[in-house]
Length: 241
Image (cartoon, rainbow, N blue to C red):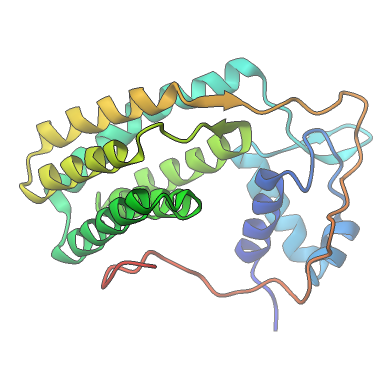
């Protein structure tokens, strides 16, 4: 069975974001094909996609390499997020379904519960699922794609300090969901803008890689098996646990 390029693209992107492949390191088709258990064809297609997204650059005499974004480029990402995310939330207020609301409310309940118990390790994935569901509720595939790519890049370039008062942070999300539920687009946009502006201050640039290091870092444990072709869209019939 031919492994689709988008599955290989997701695997490579995840490894770039997590730091398995350092900024500036080479990405040879042979190495990637062996790592993910695929042929070079989907790897080649995946690298073209990742180059269009800004995760990969092609250098003369070196081929495909992980991009090395500047601090200015990283700062631009947060500014773009401040513009796009409130827009997505406003559209969600107009276009959301009852299924979206069910998931969003379930995630807020889970977030408050985990925050109240001090289970900080569970809060980050819940935050990701919350924002993914919210942007999907906008009913705009183009905006969803832009914000998804933006979240990947921000996670690649920044670490985020956990909120000092996580219960308050989930209360903010709950207020956004309430505005979305009432289809109050203006209120939802304003609350989302406040939330994004506040959380932007918690972002810290990751340490830059050493300039002389241009080889792909070997993972501590090699990936086993082949690239999975299964997709995991947000479940709009119930909250993920």
